[in-house]
Image (tube, rainbow, N blue to C red):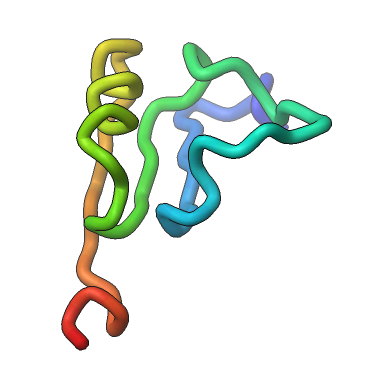
Length: 65
């Protein structure tokens, strides 16, 4: 699916980042945009933006409580 896509989006909350996992869906250089919440760390934001990935940070109910 990624190979035939014009744009690759990832939608995941911040708790899904910086984890050791057994599988990788695709290399970071194949991702165009990540949509996540504002709890993502500055280091993680910098990592992805340095790789050329756009980030869309959105408010969640958790962010406003």
